[in-house]
Amino acid sequence: MSRLANLWEETAVAAPTAEPLKGEARADVLVVGAGYLGLSAALHIAEAGGDAIVLEAEAPGYGASGRNGGQLIPGLKYDPDEIEALFGRERGERLWRFAGGTADFVFGLVERLDLRAEASRTAWIQGVHSEKAARLARSRAEQWQRRGADVAYVEAQEAERLTGARAYIGAFVDRRAGRLQPLSYARELARAAIAAGARVHGASRVVSLDRQGAGWKATTATGAQVIAKKVLLCGNAYSDGLFPELPRSIVAATSLQIATEPLPEPLRGAILPGGEVLSDTRKVIRYWRLDAAGRLLMGGRGPYREPGAESDWAHLVRAVHGLYPALRGIAFTHRWGGRVAIHPDYWPRLHEVRSGVLAAIGCQGRGIGWQTAMGAELARLAMDETYQSVLPVSPIKPIPFSPLKRVGFTAALHTMRALDRLGLS
Image (cartoon, rainbow, N blue to C red; front, top):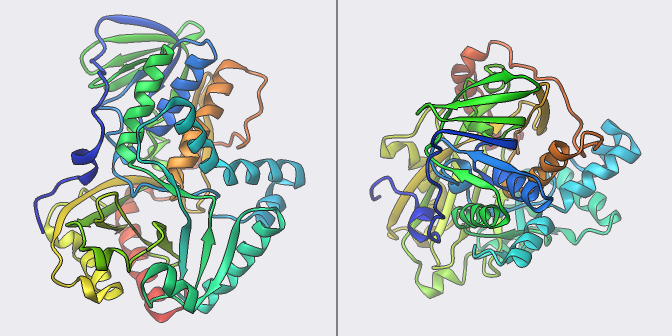
């Protein structure tokens, strides 16, 4: 395998100019973080006539927004019946409709703003690995079909035809989904936000947030400052210590990816031949797709730390060879990783951290669509104090024994892998 290199960085559109903030600035809304969530929020604030400024510690798309698998998956980890049971019929229906429409939301933005992100509508296939998972997948398909969604459950033979692999006893197929070049999409969101009037600054890490009258004052690592009426915290898994309770409420898991060299045509046509994207029902999830050049991109969980040695990615190589033995001998040319925010119950959250400071965090594998749509929700909340968000505001609940998350995550990972091998998950 080659050097540590993010394929998306090599193939993305050029980044827009996002100079570091200098001096002092004022805005209606300060957005901290320039991933999908923050850039969507800034874009929608600017389009509504508001004044937004975005401060990003690195560059737009630096975090998970530029390091994910490029799979645009609608919905949530929970199915519509369960959502309605938890939130009530009216609120629950509003939430599942919102979640089920997140891919449509992204495709709408791509078309309206002419975003160059290699976006295409294609099915998401969720490979089913056990009878227990099959029961849940059949129920999921039935629930969404009752609500008019273009989804289906297919048996093993059709799952093999769709995926090119014999690993699954069935599959949930969601034709509302899609794929795109994730870093290009983030950069294009930044370009669109700037064109709409938002100010986006890279290399501007916020190191403090302090009350300033009825608003807030943010100070960057270089001493530049922003005074704003409202603050939107959009760092997700890269949330730092501005409000320590926020990172303590999530598991910042590592998601790793590898990419092959472009596959020969015969092999390319045998793996996800319809251009679909795939993840599976294992507790320790795997996800893959082909990119525009015909490379196979495989992703999965990594250690609870920054990845380093090539061995950190070895389980993904084994997964590729196990699923597609014909790829033995094909070179892997790229490997990279990033952090994703996960809550133990797999629900995303919306918090009012302090008066005038909102945070949306956690996307549970649905980040491209969910975070983009939630950015628009944050924009409405920042601009209209009477607006009731589709996701209820909830208190922050730090994970018990949070300093021991690394140990607990590692132990849980080993347990989940064992359950996957035994077909008990």
